[in-house]
Image (tube, rainbow, N blue to C red):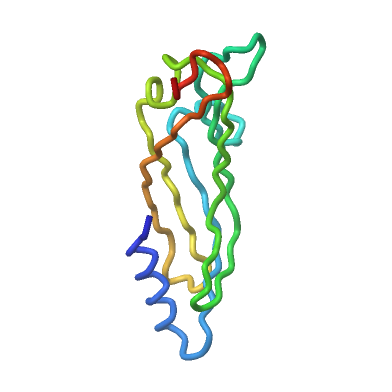
Length: 136
């Protein structure tokens, strides 16, 4: 997904310095539905089809970043864990708020400050050889 906001930030930062521009900062994010106060930012769902099996999940990990002019950079990492769960408890059936709120805190140049982005999340769960997976 292309973000015009991020492009404008990069162009603005480039205009602040005549030489090479460097963006630095960090990110934070929130997956709605993550109610555990452990700081891991994990969203889990699904009824495992295997006795004592795991739920499927998304996990957001924040990163610090440094970006030189015209160089792509990572602002966060989202891990997806696909497990054997019942179709009736799939992501699309049980998660109401399907979004990721991402905040980028730019520390250099400091005039940029914080920008908040909201992304819609779509998960297509795959068949893990069970008869009742989301693909069937």
